[in-house]
Image 1 (cartoon, one colour):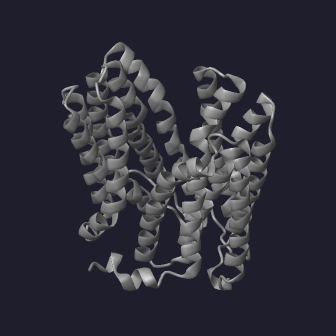
Image 2 (cartoon, helix red, strand yellow):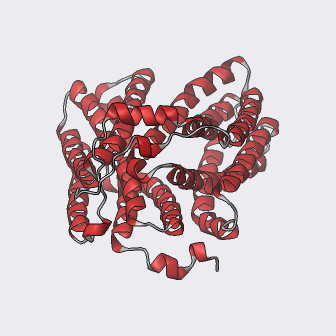
Image 3 (cartoon, helix red, strand yellow):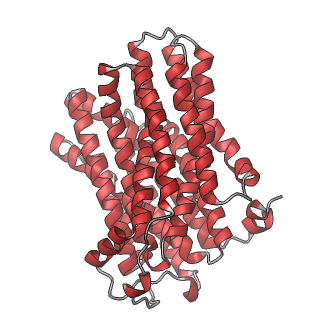
Length: 415
């Protein structure tokens, strides 16, 4: 077996790393346990229109993008532990308030609050994984495991939400609040049993202006961010845009196909991610990203050319898309970890929250293109964007990076 995915390497990952991996599984799972049902609550209790629901959910998602970037910076300045504890505390408060909110304004405020725990947790937890694992192969394995856990949480969360009755009982949000309280206790335990030398540092003299200046001067990183926003924008067209396309085309077995596409995507990610990692472990990370982009491009071309009534064709295109996803998204995190200086891991992972802009814009722009030009034009355009992403990665290696030592006066301190 490849050394990267060997049982011995997996077994030797320290306990705090496993705690963070399962913490990410929980945070993503609890988020999706309630998020899909918020729209149901707003409609049933307050009779909000689809446009009003979409407006508030989009605004809340954009708040999470900004909060995620700022949380990464704060974790570099003050340490990872405070941010993770704040994430757990906000989760307890937000979902407890959700369970009790009765007015429309209160529920909308709770929607905004409910996006913050995930935003506050994501960047610091990824940065802490890097702090705990000095070996680059261990970090890569942990980040691959992180992506697996995130996907598993996103798949299981809605099912648990149905079981817990979130869709029909607002007080079920207390269950999520209690779970965040348990997560906070887990973080306290994790830190107590983490050796002093493995505890994450915070960076002396770091401020937001300096952090933004470093990010602005890192031209390679900025172009990678742009490329990855485009990747998320393209990938998201396989979700809402595809459903709109098939609905408008009066596809005869629409419900069956949508369910099959979701199940196929989840199965491919769960079953293929680590076999693909083992197969490609000898490849440089950027080369793996190229392969993922090629598969993503082929899926978009297949979507563009697939006859509208060919049921198995849509499944085939989604299979190719899912294989590309299994390779691409985990390795984007690994590549980002390689680019980030240790003292700025949190800020770099925080900046990566901008990827969500691609997801946020995709339904709007996809819907406009469907209205004006139709589905084949949308997916052929996405295929061309994939070529643009490859070009971004090709030229990024030639771009200038700052001399980080001129900016940072790093001194390890207890968080």
